Length: 601
Image (cartoon, rainbow, N blue to C red; front, side, top):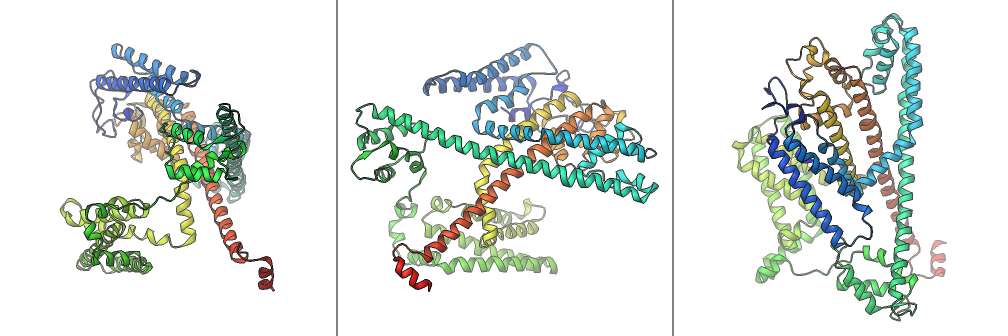
């Protein structure tokens, strides 16, 4: 439903048959539905969501309707807005603004990410007040010291320039006028930058990180307490059947069958059930006590190593998989030297790319590409044969990465006419294989594992950023839609027009996202802000400064905090694992204390 907004007609051109000449009114060029088709699509999506919500309410047998009342109200209001818009043409509609709220009400993980941002914001409110007071205080001093310069002629202008300076976007331009009067003016800017950027802004990040870590620990503790409470309640329910003080294996097997009904719970197979029962039953008497029952959830999360079944090739071609040729390939691939040879070829590939960039010989590049593509294809084919087929091969993320690069290289090599510079593209694909070599170094391996474990959490934050930008884009389209065009005389003489920034507009949703991304990077963001001020009102600065605070300061600080926390946790986990390994070497369980003491002498 959120993606529908990219294909809808922008609200500012509802009254016209088209949205103007793209050469005059720049837009992204994404194909758009007609107004009627867009409303019909939105109506069908909302009805589908309402039916889905009703089915969930019926099949999952919710004990309280309050958990879904917000979703129902938002969907019903959106449907009413669509129906009204079908008969009455309006430039401002309510339902597009409700779409992010509907998504938030449905997704629990996104709500948790928003809570992290909310608590982080609440923790730094006093710091933001101090930061803006510091800017105001220094602006009042600047109007006295540098009143003859254009940047600090008035308190309002000085305050605005110092806000921009906090983002480092206008330095040293903002200081040039003052430095021309006196070179010692640099001390003013040095004090402002040192305390404002290097101290207060870093304190903001540290506070958000501390708030994020505290909330994460609290959530983990609450989740564990909730888990224990639910397990105790479940044990009492099962125990109440016979009131013997324990649960037997037959009742546990019935519980497993009931858990397997729910699609959101991973299936518990027979081998896993036996493992859970044997682990929980510490006394081996066939009885599960209440204390032993508390281990259930943790044991369900343990994934057993599945017994190796017949591969695809073994099922279809059993005679081939027992031939000498197949067994020879399997032994070659499974030998540790095979991986070393592949890594050596990767290193040679890197050296050849460097030589190609220096020599600039197209014939050399063609020969290198041909030989290496053949070798890399052989590597993939041999691994597939040894593992047992394509399905088994792509079970590892590393193999998926190599396979995609190899297939892409084959497509480019076999279809050179479809690409402008197939030689350079093949070199880039060859160069991208070098990332595999980095995994052999512990520090890079830690980075890779951190990124992999952090990916689900980062995706939730991406959803939050997407929705916040969605709301800001809708506000931007309502305020500035269609105004940023080449015929707007208000842009004449502005740095915005001279820099050809008209492509950064809110004439459609995708263009709005491009504009907001540019603002988040903060380089020259004040030029964009002043361009919109020139075509509207000075209050437009509130919109852009507000987005800088929310999008560039708070949200990015939460993202950095999550990365720091996950990376530090990964480092701590690896250090603990290394210490345990050393302890096992010094104190193996099969040796007596007398033997250990004798060896330590």
